[in-house]
Length: 282
Image (cartoon, rainbow, N blue to C red):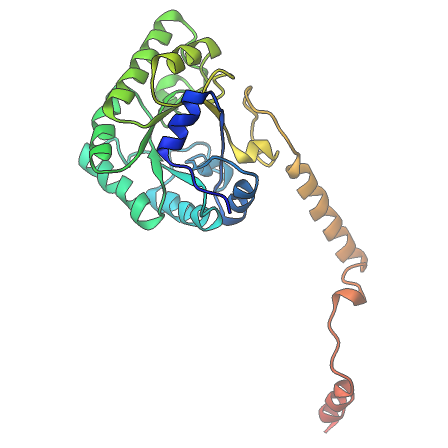
């Protein structure tokens, strides 16, 4: 049976140069496959807003939605390190509210850690949650909940000045008590500097190969999400196309009378049909 990793295992992987591999998952069956595939971690990302609910972004996602999906993922992957993603306005208001909402993930969904977006401006929340005995992962670079301020879903840290700001954010997040950091849509050179500067694990989603591990959105990996494809996405399957073909074939066979065939139907027990017809004639 697979053994769930701890924060200390993840730290040792960084120190030994072993890459961590993780994906998002939003439901029981995907989590099952992720665990069977040997993923080191699973993130129940607020990307579920787009991948599951069809929102244009992550802003509408609620705490209840995140808890609901985290519960399902935990059931599907009981032996994998699961991270719950703090949705918009679940931690920005103040540290007390951040602790309360983070606690819901641990109490109701039995996650192993939570993740929240932002650098220096959320350090008070990171410290408070950490002081509450909960593991916190930071997230800097392209932070989707702040995409309006960033001018959209754009790469960050592409100038020297912007890169310095990101490095300072990373240092602040570590100092505040985060056990790891996710860097999104940032030049590889900048992510490498952050990885080298920080003692905690630094993971990449669209920030190059020099990080301590890689995260990908499962809907992108499988070719299910159709709205857009980010530059850093590599599709490992095209289940969207296969799903469409399967549904079209099903519809065609039903309309043409080719499904269901006799092998797909049930028959009455021997002699029972005659009894039924006799009873109906009375």
